[in-house]
Length: 192
Image 1 (tube, rainbow, N blue to C red):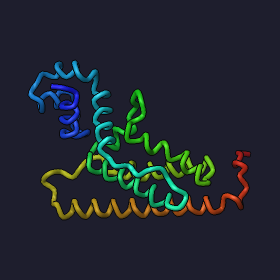
Image 2: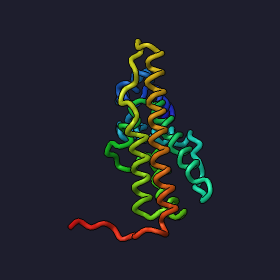
Image 3: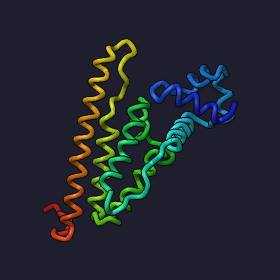
């Protein structure tokens, strides 16, 4: 047994059912044996997220000419990962000792958006909206195994269509902000 086998077992169990006891059952060992390799469930969750992150071919740094498509590609990748791993969306925002590996690439986007001409406040707002749209739109639990596959597919397609519409609206707003940045007053609003 090693950390890689434990991490693989954790991913195959899934984030909704992930406990040290379930991993131990999957590996046919006592759960106390896992603690020689993984100090806690939090560490195991982070290791599983790190593995998923490392398996993803994230889009590269944003370019001035194709940034919208690149952001859409990045968030499409994130959408695919969180919808393929029930419970992951919840885990991404659970309090942990360090930011989840899957969000590290997203964190870099703000600086990249500023570099292409979006003001800092707008860059943060765009990233926040995209992240909320992507992770917040994922159903908390998967369809039950005995559910009708046609209705499950219809719900998934509908959720994906709504997510894509939201992404397009957010990105369209970001584009208008980039184009209007030279023509607007940049003084922040103040409460009166």
